Length: 158
Image 1: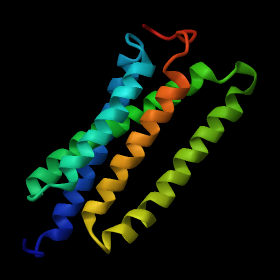
Image 2 (image 1 turned 90 degrees about the vertical axis):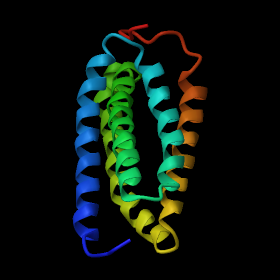
Image 3 (image 1 turned 90 degrees about the horizontal axis):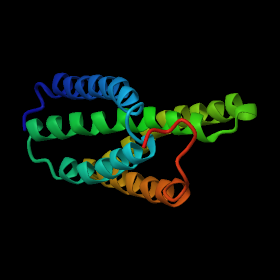
């Protein structure tokens, strides 16, 4: 398509996705008080892996925008639910350190991600979303193996 409005459209897509992420973080934080955060986390991770496929295959700006907002909703939920599960699984005596490490990992990921995405996008933007799908799937499998078979966590809704 035309590059005339590319910067504006990119900003609109990124801002819309960020707003969706913020909204989902709040909403899923509340939902996790009524439902299992572990199950919700697994659903957001699996959903993220699946949504990255149509995102990578998007042929129009509208499709890219729509799928990116959906991914933002899942990503915001995943982050909040990861912190929720961290607070439920980390022993109280080291909870501050544990959540500090979780925060550090989140911030490092936020710093490294644009570098990796920019590098991949020089070859093909679709590779960025393909890698995202693989990362979501890998984290889904890891969480399923580590937390999937545990008894309900203290304070965890069922």
